[in-house]
Image 1 (tube, rainbow, N blue to C red):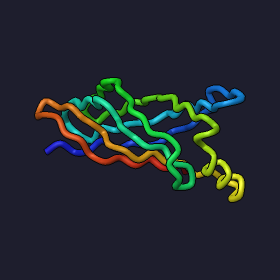
Image 2: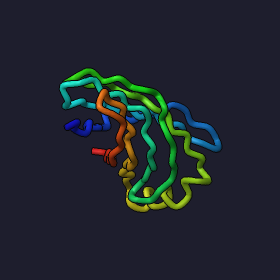
Image 3: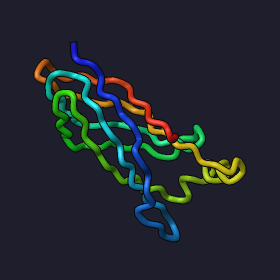
Image 4: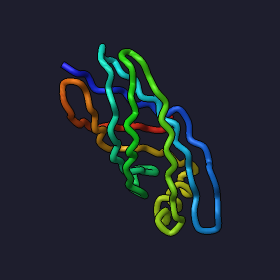
Length: 123
């Protein structure tokens, strides 16, 4: 039986800031607990700030992870300020912005393809 890979948020950096948007670079570590290669075909996700949904997207990179190994994957999320409205106001009121990615990982293995839910939270 193939086990689910484990996803961990390593860091988030500001990629760029403009008058209308903010680009964040997410560094995600993916651990493969299996004794076979696993390919993360894509990750469909929603991005939340303080539990308020602000963005959805899909990464589509065939990330091959060796048996018992790990790989770091980086993805840029572009956020328009107009889409951040309520979440940005909530973060200002709270004095903090806890973020999370919730989604589904689509995996290819020598035994077939499958998907499973993934959640990554800020520390």
